Image 1 (cartoon, rainbow, N blue to C red):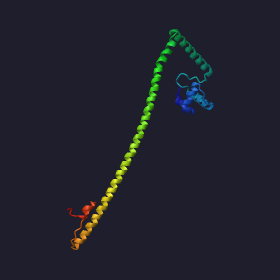
Image 2: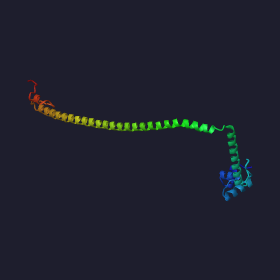
Image 3: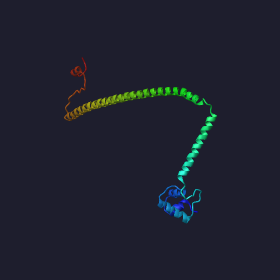
Image 4: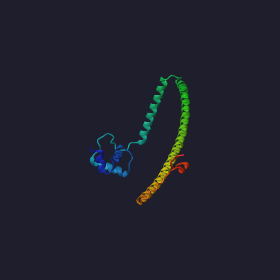
Length: 196
């Protein structure tokens, strides 16, 4: 006896094709001939169902079909004998009574889901609008800070120039007093001491 794999290797075919030949399933005639030759040389595989002759498929299908129909007929007869006559209408009425509230609840759930989806959409639009407003606020604050720093930078530049001029004039031993005013009201510019 040889295993399916040994037969497949000897016949240079797949194990699946060897199983098909052994079980009488259709394969190409070339593969079937090689597998049969390998089985003749090595021996049949060690399991039942090694009928190498093709089984009559139509007869098997007819027999199986008839057995199934007979089994269905027996089961139907048993159910008819066990169930009382009015059970079908009772079951139908019970299902109708139970299914109607379920259908109503499903319709209510659909409406609730639709309103929830609409609420989520409006909330999303509100969030997007608020987000855009916050971005605009951040852009405005950034612009104000940048403008403030530019103004501070200009003032520092003026102060540096004035200090440089003061150092140069101190090097020449000139003593001149200069008053520097930054954004002071016009009336205090006329009176540097701040006295009235």
